[in-house]
Length: 345
Picture 1 (cartoon, rainbow, N blue to C red):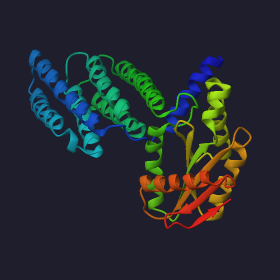
Picture 2: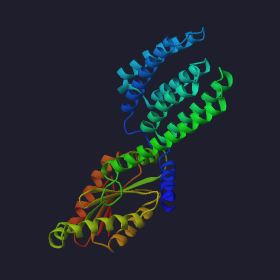
Picture 3: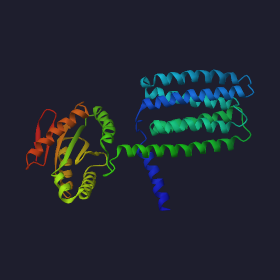
């Protein structure tokens, strides 16, 4: 029972944490949508040709031919495709499949619906944000329901609907959770469990964009553990790893849930916090230093920015502040803005 609860909680966390998570590569998404469109349309044309073709099947011929051309065009122009365009192309695929079902695509539309719809949900939950993928799933449910209600009805429409929708939901949850887990592994530091550098870049890009549209300020800090090399040399790497893990836990404990922490590399860590004032920024740094010093000593260099500066420029200034803090044994941290004004303790 506890294992089941743990699994359900992980799925819930995926649904809660990643609704607006952007795809790692929109180019890859566009290429897969193009490949799916071209392949699905080609298969659709072959099936249509092989069946007895009533007059309504002319719609299928035209739709599949146009979508085959569109799929090939998307493949060629994948680097220029926007996320909106890629989403629209996949939605058109759903519309064409639903149209084929509505016009009597075979004697058992549920089987064909599952086959083509499963392609779509697998691609959506693999390459799109969870919110976009859920939108595609909802569109499939809506159009498939309309196809069964207003189109040629199979022998058991309710049974077909339940079979198709349940299959799609299970496929969506499985593919979405697996993809989310893989993404989490790729952006998480294996030792400490917090974000790695790639995860930092991924997470902070959204915060920078959000702050640029508001009156809030960004606090970016870099931290370096004192004499960490000597700890590894004298106490061993196992003890050094243990200190890194404890340091990450202390950082997570000291910052707010909305703040971001990452292992920058080696014995360096980074934090990002959205603050309203310089006083609040100083309080966050002091709380962090106090918590981490229960484990080990460290130095911190931080920058406070209220403008439209890039993360790269803020990291550079924070790194310079960290370097100055390490030169003075009596200085634990330095907070500076991009103009060079310094407050240190």
